[in-house]
Image (cartoon, rainbow, N blue to C red):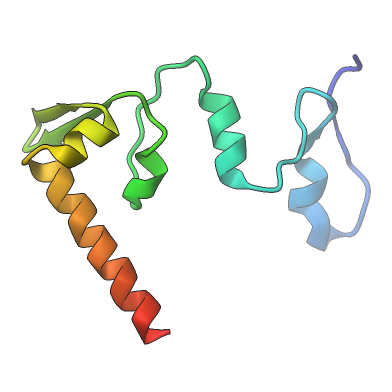
Length: 103
């Protein structure tokens, strides 16, 4: 396997694309979520998410409120519970449904 390289040629408007590492270790993913899943595999990740759907694949979620642990568990367990996470998921689902109806 070759060492990843950074391309340095091309027009200035392609700078972001040119600066991306290339090689077997850094494949370009078609989906950012697939890339994140691969990067997070086998690691402890601290994530702040604007969309709760991003957290569905996590093994464990710790919900903080006012700097303290309010809930701790799996996404499924927290949704079945009677707490903050469940309420946030319900609000997000309602918002997404309204957006879908408006479109």
